[in-house]
Image: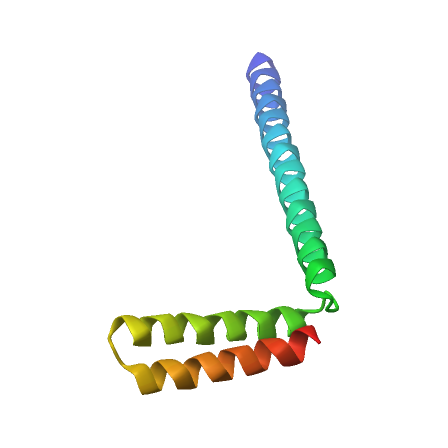
Length: 97
């Protein structure tokens, strides 16, 4: 009888600890998701674009093209750098305007 009571109280204690951990992580990830959402909303307002997944993807692609341009200029490849710069700026100007 006392052994069953011991395991029952042990299970309740373990369940309480597990519930505390899950609720804490849920709150943390909820705040993190809210912060990311607010960041994307603020960035899209500043750029004048809609906060959709497609426009964020196009923005990242344009920034990646500009990164490739910088890398090409560092490697002293002027023609490739100019091509990547024109492509990146063309994509970003189409997104922002």
